[in-house]
Image: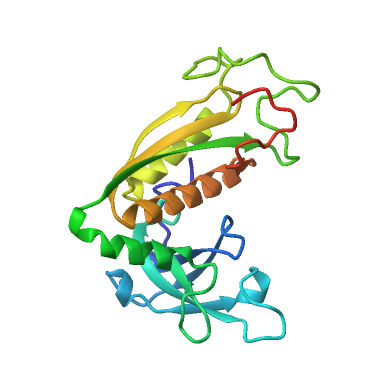
Length: 241
């Protein structure tokens, strides 16, 4: 894809240093982002500057109250879209008093991971998802009715069975570029449904990499004009599991 591994330069030909800050909004499911230019490469997450955003527009603050929420960098990854010195910065959200926001579930998870760190916990996860067109219709499904019963679509090949492979492969390459521990991809039991496997990751890194992998998937799909849903039953009266 044209946006992966492409270095971005300014008019002088110098590679621009920048970062896209990414966070989970108040729904607990939707990702948000904003991008900034940096004078240098801060390196470790704790060296990146904090940033702010309007929490009343992301379901993280009520209108009329102090809605300036704080983005505190937690994990940094190479950016496969801007390339060069750009980074993707996964952030935790703090309230105006610098306390974890109510929807900052990472903070509670980090507490648990720190308590059991001596056990050296490692995790592996899989993520299933379904591609939808701009009208919310599953990719590869007939406009009226349902596709054939499950059977021919799982780990399949062929233009009448596979829909979205170019998107999936691009996400795979983007994940590797970003340094994520992605180790498998395959089609699932209904047209337009796919899965990837992630891990093994130690402690809180598992959650961080899962959210970043979802972000990459949304961004890649966006460039192909489709959307992604992680809902377990996105289609009404679906006959697939």
